[in-house]
Length: 248
Image 1: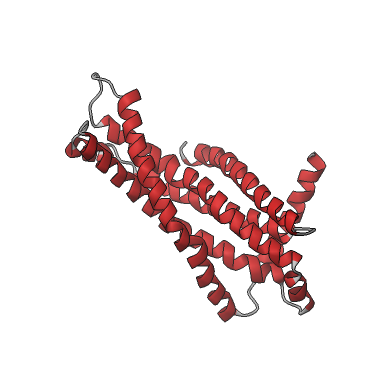
Image 2: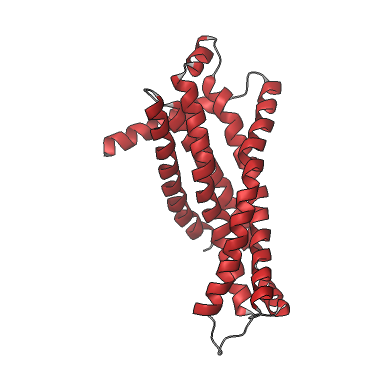
């Protein structure tokens, strides 16, 4: 097990070395980048907004039911919800969700190219297939993630306002005061930093599993599953490390 993990890590690092070289044709690279940005980033915007809206509302309700007490100021609900969204949800949880949506898509697409010998054809023509296929996806994912995180934060706050207005258990002024209370700008930026690292993990790990597929269509499906599982575990592990580095 350890040997297999080290072998996979070595192959991954070698693949990343081939990936991060100067594109042979810059115009083609940017065309692929725009396409991947739309496919991986913009197409994920709706699900990010939808899930963030409902989780923001759910957080507000759960904090009100399980944490708040008459001995605590009412704005504590908004303060606690803001910290959860900025520090963890908008970066870590959203990226785990994207690992399932985007990661499986990347692994399946590249895996299909491998089993249909499209990657072999690129190599025969003298094209750096790793750079040609993986680099636009990685750059697009890292570029799109700040946009997705921003919309996730906004949708979470909107969900909290809606549930407070509909439920009537917290005034808009108390919620607004809680969201603004003792605000630390570094909490927002640390979330962005973590999201950028997670976006790289999703794109590169998923690309690795798709690029190294051996076999037929069954292996393509297995590569997609492995990409989601490994990316999610690495996101959680990296989140633990980055939280200790950035918040201490």
